[in-house]
Amino acid sequence: MRENLLHSSEHQTNFAAARARHCRGGADEVLCGARLRSGGACRQKPLAGHSRCIRHAGPHAARAFRERQRAAFRTGKISAVEFERAEARRAANRLRDRWKKNPWTPGQTIDLGEHEWAFRHESGIASRSMASVPPGVLDWLRWKYRRLQLDRRRDSEWRRVVISELPNRVERAGPPTADNFVEAENGDGPPTTVWRVDPTEKTYSKRRRADKQKMPKRTRRLKALPVRPSSESDTRELAEIVHRHSAALSPLFAKCASAADQLVLATAFRDLVAHPGDSQAHWRWAQTLRSLNLL
Image (cartoon, rainbow, N blue to C red; front, top):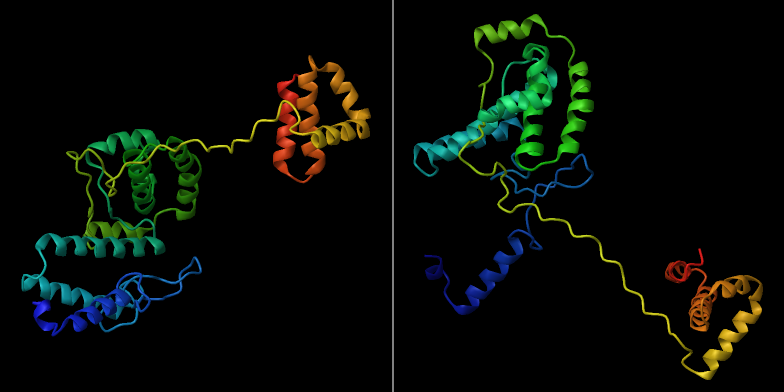
């Protein structure tokens, strides 16, 4: 249908060029631009009729966006699965906003399913009462377990979370208040679960590619030291350096097994004297002393 609206090849070329400028990464791309905590600018697309994205446009724009989604769901423009996913995300955001004010607010945004018992034992929650940990902290700990133990195995980071971060968060949360129990009895709190681990899946990460094994860093290979001088001038230069620094080189020459070893030692010392600020020259000199058993 779009091709019928393009009247000529020139029109089509201009349309493609303009589309490339306004697409993601183009020169005329329209972005939210809100200032982030990191000091940068938000690079999300703004909402229709707004200059900010869904996260920075404010509550009125978020409610209008939800109403548009409901209308699109009623008319069949979006599926029930997509609308339920958006509703679950909004419910989780509301619950996390309540946890910022009161971490004892009842609720849960993740259900580990068959991994729940393993989570309780590995986090140490099984050894104490679940009621002693705020729901907000417990939900945060479940997400940490999913990312550090189910998505990938990072045992050192998981131990640091359990030993250091968990006690600090429980201490900052403080004791529970009576309002939390009233809210739980009335059932006015947010939904208990909006995300569930599927036990039939082999992986629980959103990423499709597994972690690549990091290869060791390659060290730059150095050229081998010459066994003999390349010219007569080179020989004269080595002789002058050996004579000038005889006090330092004579004890080393006495430990060398052959004249070839003395020549290699003199060549490395010449590079060190010629380039005193070069780290490679210092490394070459140390390697020469180590290879000749002079250290």
